[in-house]
Length: 106
Image (tube, rainbow, N blue to C red; front, side, top):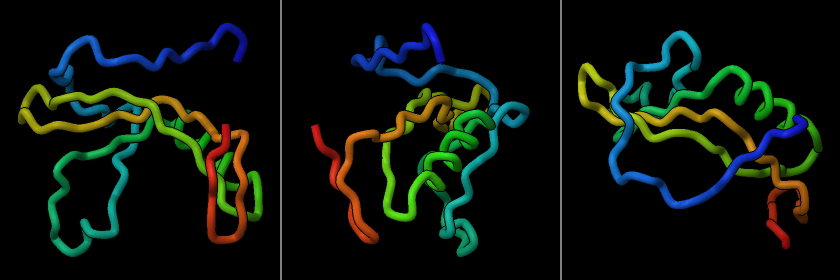
């Protein structure tokens, strides 16, 4: 994406942003533990563009792939519960991988 930059820096605040749940623009990631009645400490939502990029990267090789998820720490303005919205995906381009391992290189 031309001109697209992600700046990784310490957060400007130590508090989450108060905002409504992103139910229109993102899908909540369901943990396998949710089926056992366990409540997560924080819910994770993934935007549609980020989800597509995750799927494309996951299918890009027959071995392990990796990367980083970039998003925003938020707090539901109605309930006060924390949640995370994954907005961007940074695929790890320079890795050594095999069928059961992934090593991030310089």
